[in-house]
Image (cartoon, rainbow, N blue to C red; front, side):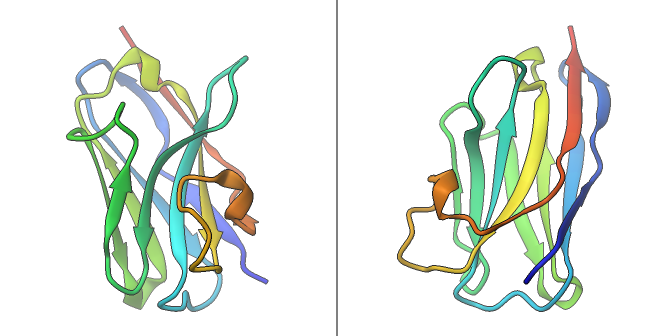
Length: 125
């Protein structure tokens, strides 16, 4: 089992920045993928970003490419999502998730076994 706890959400004006953190309750193994997903009211949960824990390789949805950056700190078992140039359409609950199966596609929510409780990000225009 693994517990994930997100933090860092809040209210920010358009063009501003936030950094989300996701702390894992135990060591994250090198074959894990840590992902970020978001869900806006009335919409389906969507992929935002993912990072391969061992290599640090990152992936992004087209909608956030060039504005968001994922990183990890192995010593702290923590993954981060730096969000810059935020837009009102980025408003959503952001979830951190862990995928222990290296064969699973990183952008499929169904492939992630462990999820955090979510943190609200609100971007005002």
